[in-house]
Length: 408
Image (cartoon, rainbow, N blue to C red; front, side):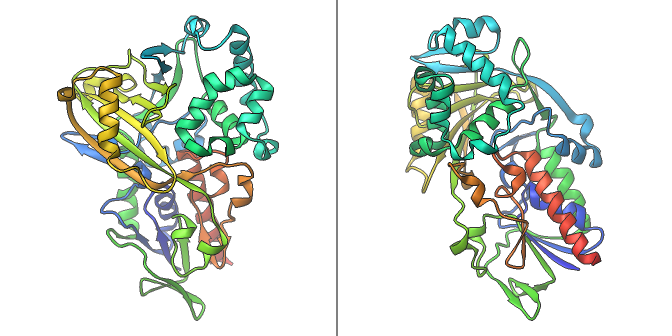
């Protein structure tokens, strides 16, 4: 069969990887390189992700893909520390002693939060799809814990729609972050960055398929039992981009999946400023919801400079001059001389991920829709939280469906 794959992110690359040996596959990617949200900057002699990334111990399908690409030996497990920044103070929240000393929650709140964290690992989140995260936390832990601990996190991630987010998303998020020892969380990272994964996938796909870079899809139509994409004829189309962006298919009107954008600033600095913490959540309102000090996670010696992400999410359009606003606020809040910032990069993706509001399950699309094959962040493996593992599963499952169709 002649197959068109729209989108060169992790899902599209995975599907192409599994289909390219047995079929004639063309991949369309609007950017000048592959990788999607897993793309990286090339800075001197190293690569660093545009958007911060790590993986978790249960991302088994991701690890299986790494093994098949012969890069699994590059996966390492590192200590990921976290904390809260409030009132100009960094509060680490990793060891039992640090958690007990945290002044913004009572001892009762901390016990209840600890019990919820333990339960979250095995909870069925299905029934929580119709309950807001706020209502669930208030009823389970209490109003004070919600206002002091969870509300700032939800605000940083979802802004004004924080009260619409489902408890299913929140509990899934807590569960996936519960792989903690006495000193912090164990997180996975690839030596050389996740560019190593994209490079290995891209090399294999490039040998098997035709990769059309800088070639956005502008027209899709059904003609005499086949598909026309940008004037080329195909038996099957697999789209991994948001359905509302797929032209000429009618999906934009029928499937209004809520998305939010991400604006991620990457800074190079002369010294570290988060007291050794990798992931620092902001308690007060700021133009970014978290400070992710990459080189407090991956050894700074691999880069020769301290690397810090400032993470911001938005709905609609990104705020004007956000890069300058973020830098100015960061320098003021963390007492950084602007001259100590060597360089910065800003990555913006208006469709960085679904907005997991109450009732999101009704938005989940089957892999086959209107004669098309669809797979991506809107697919069931990425509910109720998107992940690299979910992207791989979606790519594998849609490739298996297409293969079975070809053999029928």
